[in-house]
Image (cartoon, chains in turn blue, red):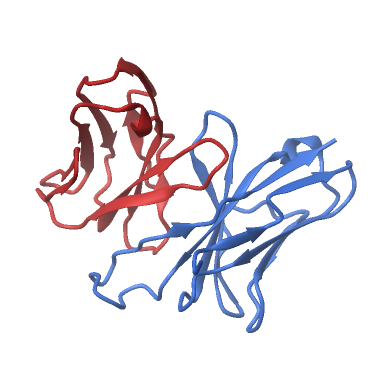
Length: 121
Length: 110
């Protein structure tokens, strides 16, 4: 299966602990997005990365949250000192380089993983 | 910030009925995607529309992009229980970041 892989699927953390969420993009995709979803809500953009670069982190809280997409290995979303309000489903999506392939210049199709459900107790 | 409004928020219908859900914005989008999400799973891409006025069909699903590329609709003919899920639209306006609506939650009863 060459789809977007996220792990773990479920993560339980006590308040104050760190949460690390991993995402391996689809083969050939160099762009990764992280989104957060609460019940009855849509997907809220957090951060957009390409290999070794953060392109846009305007949706990510400036404190306690960080993201990286190293040259080798998966993208990581890290939440330090978790609080109950961090409980949510976190989704990663990957996309090929915008403007490449058979799509138009500005078409962006994102392919999602199954998500990590974080519960803070 | 480009906002996408989806309506209705909830829809509960019987098997065999037809339905239409809407995705509207005041902003122009370069492209717009429709996704379906089932409980406990990630969104699955259904279609991408790019050209104003474009119509795409996927079996019983018909997608239309507005002429001005500010809105879109999804029409399902003869809905089946397997169509149950959260339908999300996402637009991209040049930033390469898909912006999502809150979705329409559809339940199709047997």
